[in-house]
Image 1: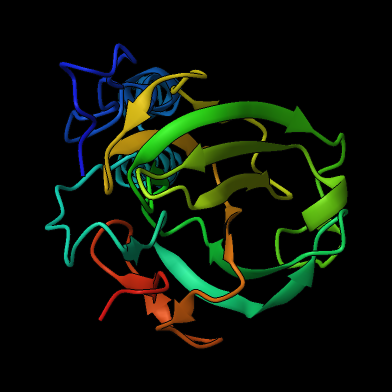
Image 2: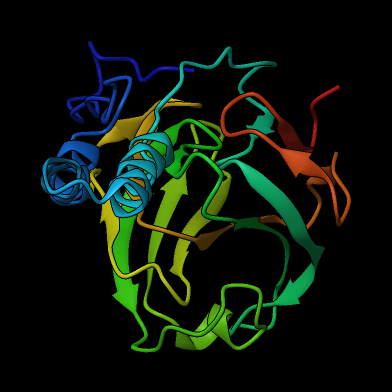
Length: 228
């Protein structure tokens, strides 16, 4: 559900990145491509092939496909491509319970993140200072991470947490506090292997299990209370 723009002055987030291949690919892929060219000129075929393969890998890593968003406003879609590594109840600092669904992204997955639900951004905070493997339980609380809090039009409050891993060193999160973000919209990315968690109200009904493979924007993770 989109905001009532006539009665609600809140700005609407402009989806990004939307290009088929994220611009970072051209920046990071230029060096190995240039080295491949130099090696080829020197007749070092094996080395040229290696650097060319690395350049192709970088381009594939930053691919950004379009997706069909399923369901309605109560349907929670996956914020990332990858494998579900956690579906379970957690206890918040205030003692309340929440449902957490964690997704591990390998270096072969699409790394552009999508918004699991539509809502207004209430906070964007960054935490942590370590770069543990994203599947390490300690990564949830110790790794560099970016937590975006969202409130839906029905008052449900959720969090989307982008977490770095061993290789990942940069988190991009474009929305700012006060903006309305639509469900399934692309809003950021994490470079080179990571984890993305969604924290939902405790009565949300999960639609995935540990070990499932999901695709950002097109896989259903859960359904909020009151939905069919």
